[in-house]
Image (cartoon, rainbow, N blue to C red; front, side, top):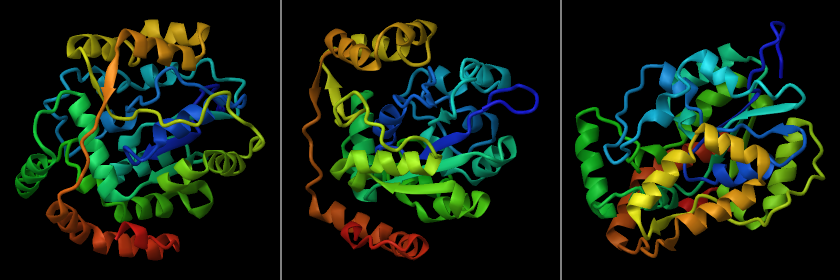
Length: 308
């Protein structure tokens, strides 16, 4: 949406949390005729422009996606063709993790709306671990958790710190306090999986666009964990399809469903089969999250006993 200076700024920020279904919801919503399908789902502009107390995991060799849109002009250039759309989206899930970013977004566009997706934090943690395995991680879930505990004592925070990213209460409260109840929509992954069309309609109502819209694609999970059959090919495909000019050009010509299937043909993978079954680890995680979940229940007036 253009401001007085004819600059088009995002007016919807899907801020996270990571591995909670944001990718699926984004792709459903991006097909709506009133929603601009940004060529880069996660520009990371605000995480790149503010001092962050984290280190990008060494497993992520290519840091370009996190820095490419640090410059405001590069960031806004992503939306230069969004003039005729009511909703212009930035879906960078790391935005929920840092309180400075909520204030930065509010200062950037005080008319912006916020969508937050949440998920059982234990399931979210293991899903993040599964994603890390897809990217080349070699440690077990328990080993990664032990390293996180050690690094947390030293004040180090990485993307692969699965536990901390599931502490939702303070971050959700900060967005609600910053933007107000009427501009923040809290959704749950469980609802998105059980009734995606209903959730999408709720989102459309929130955005004041046609809520009868039905996307032209199956309601299947996006961004699920798979292990590449050929890691080298996977690395090349992922690099060239994340924010590249080629990928942006192809999205203008071909439907995103076709391009996703093409990526699967070029970069075949096998489902990630590992399950979280260690009861000791599960109980430790339940104890870690219990206080945060209880506070979140009160804040959102929602029964989250299934998470406990």
